[in-house]
Length: 237
Image 1 (cartoon, rainbow, N blue to C red):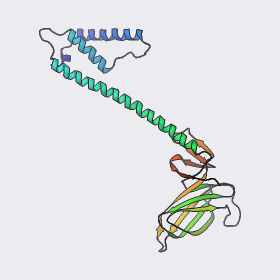
Image 2: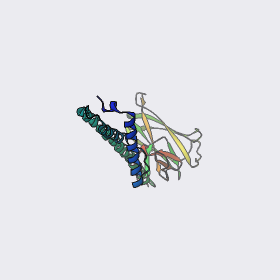
Image 3: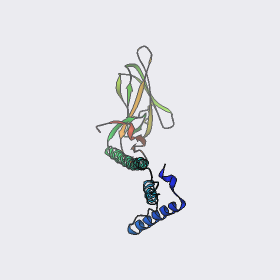
Image 4: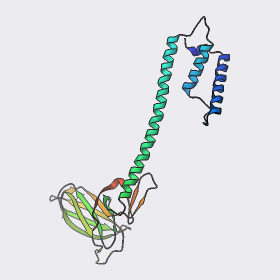
């Protein structure tokens, strides 16, 4: 028989009165704003009230009460653990944000290499890297301006791995391009004419940071670079 099955209206009223009295006393003696008890505290109040009002000729089954107590104790511990895990998760997220912001700040003024095909033309120079999956007998490099117009093209060869390309801003018609952001397109084939997969990396000096969003953003003179896209740094010449 569950001890809860024997509760009467008067018993519940007594339990409610006991809970109210306890809560009132606690509120008057502490500065907390909490006005409700936890499920575990409520359960214990009801249990004590039931035991105080049980029929002496038909006492409650102590084994059942013990089992229920153990169950509620486990639930209480589980609630506490969940609360601790939530606090820990929040702390770890905050710590991760601090670490990322610190890493982003360390790149300020540094010449980085990052994933991306856009790079700034500054001081008459724009620089990219292209990474090839295999040796390439022919690599077509095409530079476009911010409007998508192709301003320069050249063909070269490439080795498997990282290859460097520096554009001095001279356009195909011989004129000098203005400063701005330019995009590099790479098309490579091997000696048999088969396509070779490639990946383009940009480079430039980090001139500013944006730490207001969920992820840190680096600014390389007009080019936005996510912190996760940074592949490394190089010495500023």
